[in-house]
Length: 388
Image (cartoon, rainbow, N blue to C red; front, side, top):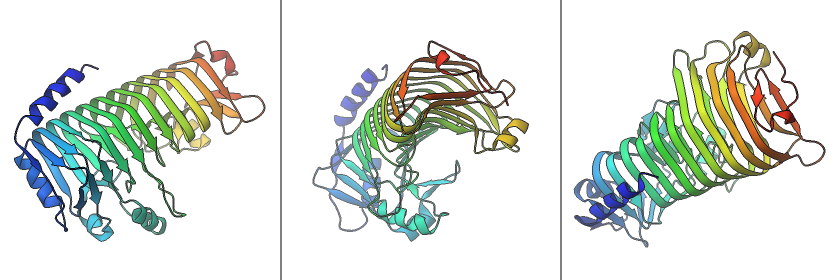
């Protein structure tokens, strides 16, 4: 990608300036971490060090910084504290431990961000209104590289890119699994929101929700060479949820994706019904997906969270155009291997399917569609689409 030389130059520059190395204090290490990042161009957390992050991290407005995370940042699971003090994110009513923003920022080093999610998963099971923090929110940041980092057991989403530009994640390992009967829900790998020119590459994700989700106003995004297990898929949306809001997701390429034991594979979801918003999904390509035991390997749901009657009466105002499902192979968990369900009145156009080779556990594969015209060399797999 065109970012590579820029980030290498940035890394060389950052490592040649004043640096500092942190050690655990035995108490809350957030103040010393914040102070070090403010004072030093390079901040190192050594491999043998675990810093206790017990209060929130506001690292916005940075410039030319390098965080060499070789050890661990462990977010103290003090639920009462974080409930009252985590940074609030208005979009979908989220909160976060950490805001990282500014320009020319590198974080690497092979270390770990530990969200200590188990107490949160257990608490959420008894209180569905509990707001659980995102581990890391890249916020209003330009030219960011996050590389060679492990992220484990986030209470909710692992990453949010919020109003970012030129943000690259490479070689990220995400793992969130509950050790109790309470599921590690909503532990998305990435959500990209109001951001442009984002790359997510060469990563392994084991989680309990979207592997990557393209939220409103995500544009020019490349997702490549991911291995996703247990997820809800590579998802555009959901979009059009909020009245009076126009959502855009445009120019997205998801390529070379392995999807295993997942709810969805390549997915687009948009709201319909009364009192919803609108938007446009345009120029989206899902290519070279290898799927194993996926409930819905290929899916468009333009009546998301809306019953058939309401969707017919109030079609989606989020238009879907120029979508490509190319070279998608593997197995489903049920008979339906692809479902392209659009709202009536021409809400979907230029939907292309090529080289689909998908198999159910037994019997014939079922391909379904409604309210659209399909093109491509795999179009013949779909019967005449239902009109509603």
